[in-house]
Length: 229
Image (tube, rainbow, N blue to C red; front, side, top):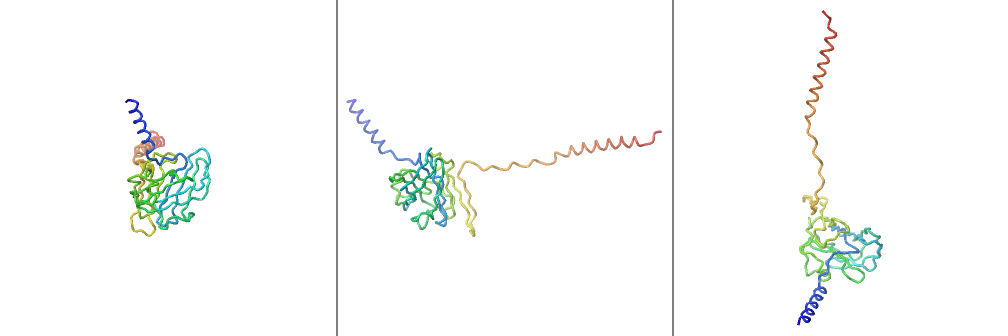
């Protein structure tokens, strides 16, 4: 009876391992930056080779919520970055990335999801939702301003905890816009501040002492010049 129970438990463990959700932690290539622009032709993203050897990406693809695009063959040296502009990809979405809710995912030459990020709230209506479902965050990275040029970038390249907190965001005010500029780094790291200038006024006692010394020397000098009686 105990043997049968052990077999059942072991079978259940294997089932759980087989169905365990994939994680977005990459050990080979990771997405480090995404530039979500109001003008789709200005958008770009960046990949990082986390390995100790150069990697040639052939038949890899990059996916948004609506499409997957085959990347041009490229070699990324060890611990190096590769920037890919949307204008160099023939099938980039005509409307570009959705500033409020969208994703960017990377697949290898076997169609296996390697890394991803998403912002806003993911939707099951996305064409690539199922492929990246176990990697999507709900909620995703908080967008600073969906109507502006937004940047999403990793706090620490090469360090992936599979969490939205890995990412920082900023938004750039558009020329001619009447809206207030938005600059919201979602990082706990605060910018360095200039130390306050030292207060003035401490030099007054020094000047006073110098004045008194000068007066003393002047009196002694005048006494020497005075005729002796």
